Amino acid sequence: MNIDLRKTSISDLQTLFEFRLDKDANYLAAFTSENPTDKKAYIEKWTRLLSEEKVHVKTILLDSEIVGSIAKFEMNGNAEITYWIGKEFWGKGIASSALKKFLEVEKVRPIYGRVAFDNVGSIKVLENCGFSKIGTEKGFANARAKKIREFVFELK
Image (cartoon, rainbow, N blue to C red; front, side, top):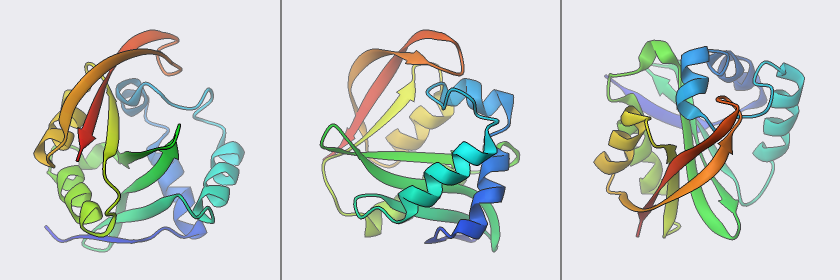
């Protein structure tokens, strides 16, 4: 399994958007956009984010095939991590491998990860990469149309 990261280009956004259309993935991610099927909004948002200095976005490749994305962004002055893997690539260790590689080049610490309380796969990814659970919050999850618990993880 050859996992690589490359700078995300606007041409990657179409494939990355398609991964976000999966209902199961949206349910697990929980804290998604209000309308995950709004391609225009997705492309506009990520095109803007690609040029922001405080956002670091990479496309995840498996043997040169796009399988997901990973990014560092800032929220309330804190560095946060986010990633999304196409559902057909789940359970293969891709997210953990990609996050480990990403953290080799993204040196901001502490860095935080947030995950829905029942997203066991994503919890394992964060733990596999050295993140520790530091708290629980409640927030409105668009994909579930209700407030749910969210675990907060930190890497120092």
